[in-house]
Image (cartoon, rainbow over all chains, first blue to last red; front, side, top):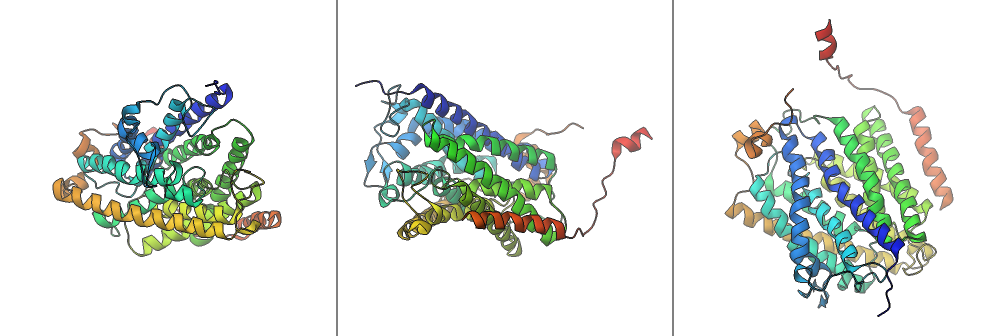
Length: 408
Length: 37
């Protein structure tokens, strides 16, 4: 077989994998700044620990479940267990890069997705329960849905468009976060005492690093180092910017001041929404997608607060709603002028694509909600989900890790 | 679609011009300054 490996594509994909890797610790700092100081280490640990845990799970069985040879459109086979047969030659998904490079790029997506959920159960979940939940969730939710969309499964066969993970990453994590918040219940003192972010600067730094890493997430998903990657890079940056500007503006009109944390959250919302669309839409569409993300995600968070759901760090509002908006917007704004290998959306004469996107959104919502509920209930029976109230009041840094973040 | 993009950005710019600043001002204690004094 002739060697088809491209040095440029391989370099870009490996660099993108490194960019996406940075996003998970960045998420730890984004979330860490938003919690109270007694829980900051435990919150950062969630992301850092997942980076290690899923790195091992992915090479042992995660990758083959998600991307192994298809079985009935539902799951990958065990052919690549422990990466048997995944080596330096190209695999079936990317003809110009080593199979290992493609595998490690996908690994970083598998890592960050369960880390996103941790924002919903912050400040009250038992560490042991968190570890088991993450392992089960990655195996029974992330890996199958990744297969459905990207691994030759039924949603990909149906024609669903998801360039970098609107359904696979953001809807699954956002919906699971809402289920986790409901199953675990509210934090002690929720609604009665202030639970303000302990370090807004840490959160803005985390958001900035997320924005940086997202270029690998979306532009890297082109797999090739060419025009499609450049388009994804530009629309990603534009949507993030519009998300930040819009969220800040809406919150300013609503609450009377231009919030710094609002700008940071808005940038993340814009990034989430452009994720599934980034390989299919042009820059004008990305402005509208970022605008919609700012409005819809901000509104969703106000609603969850009104319903007194303690999704501690607003994961559902940003990732669940932002991911769903992005997936549907892909069905509206996609154009073959950007990606000749894809399909047009509603605005370019193909209304059926919006219907396919809606099916993908609904399937990922229902599946991740049901599976997350079952996993959490099982863990609650065997391990217990929450720390005792006294430990929650003391803080998870001390009660779960026997450490303190600050000695000042 | 380009027109919609321009319009949406223009709406934001107008909103910044007319948005009122209201609400309680959070007083931050300057521990270091107090210590120095």
